[in-house]
Amino acid sequence: MRIEDNVRIPLAAERAACHPDSMTPNEAANAIQADPPLGAANEPLLLHAGELVVTQDGQRFPVEGVIRWEWLPTPQITYEFSTDSPELNTWDITEEFTVEIPDTVTIGSEILSDNEDSKPLLRASGRMKNTTVGTGEDIRRVTFHVPNMPDVNGHWLSEPGGRSWNGRLAFRAADWMFILDSRPDRRAIRDQLRDRGGYATTHTGELTRHDSTPMSQEEISSAFHLLRCVLSFSFGRQITPCLGLGFNSGGEVAWRDWRVFHIRPWSGAHRLVDETRYSDLADIFSLVGDLWSDEFSRDLLSNAVHYYLEANDPMPVNIAVSAGQAALELMAYEKLVEENRTLTSSQYKSAAAHENISALLRTYSIDGQIPAILSRLKSAASGANPPCLTGPEVLTRMRNGVIHPSRHKQKFSTDAWVEAWELTCQYVSLAILGRIGFNGSYRDPVDPNKYAGVVSTVPWVNGQPGGN
Image 1 (cartoon, one colour):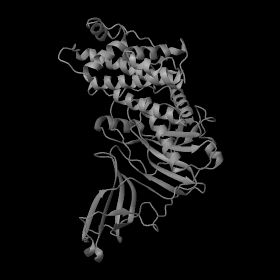
Image 2 (cartoon, one colour):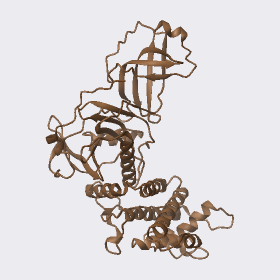
Image 3 (cartoon, rainbow, N blue to C red):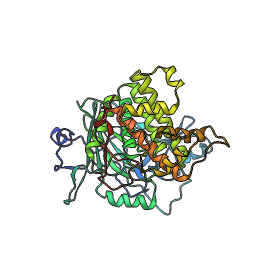
Image 4 (cartoon, one colour):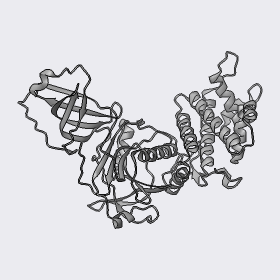
């Protein structure tokens, strides 16, 4: 099918203002144009209105309809059409069929006739399968939507009418350049999400290569995976780009990504990157990007982040702690056996899990003692039989009670579990930050002060350097 659009690629002079290496904090740029246009929280987005074609057993039936991005009950792309074609008599709606846009039709929005007196023979709706549209050749720039992402104060944006806001984030990761623009009504959308839950596009994004060379669909998918990994880790819940739109060197739309990946509904979560620390988010992007081309490191970080996301969700808290324990064992084995080679695989397996985790923490100068502020956990550890002397030891003891249940094992209070969860999240987040070589600031899960601007410096800056 033919896909065209009136949106063009900005000229080189215009794009220079978007380059991460050239922007200054007080410079205002125009926000990335969202396609499709943004709506309120949970409001469907119109992808196409006009001619569609239904195919069944090699027969094609023209219909009039719409294709939408629906947020509820979960994100999906849907079709809805009607027809009064006389060929309908040969069509068995109970059998499988596909819905597509004809090759001769421009994807976009048309005015559909809405004659109340007309009564089509058939109306149908359903969910479309994951698909991409277009050849995907000569893609030089991709725009996309980012749902449910928290705010970070960045560079200044402006729009006609004089409104401005500090909502542009520009990152360089390996060969990739990412730009994320928050929407001008970001506070209103955030309030809607807090009140209603669900989904909304909070940011629009742009992906390009640093050298402006073409991108394959596989490379775009890898870049989106990188974006998903960094954003999800930084903000503590799954954040996934969607609705990619690829432009060729002539400024024409050559590719549309209508695939739907997992997107988590809006919820509160501990975020590692503070809203005032744009530079920390940029550093994480750059450091993860440097490792992304290595398949082993990419898989390691992806798996560790997935474990961290499970650990960061305390519903239920005992499973969250168990997921965090798995992340720590993953990171410990890779660090001690694969990378530093301070232990053989046999030595690692013969040691107790808490001993390996303690060795991992020492590598990054992370204090393995239970912080005094976690008084309930500290009391539970000292009262255990035998007593637990370190944080990793009590976390492992608690996790083993979940994974290997017994009527005779010690039971822990809810308060102790909550504090164990906070300590687990601290350990896992620091282990990942240490592995990528991050030397900035982070929001400590153990710190009870959750106000914006309250950050801690990673421990290895003043101890033994972490890094890859």
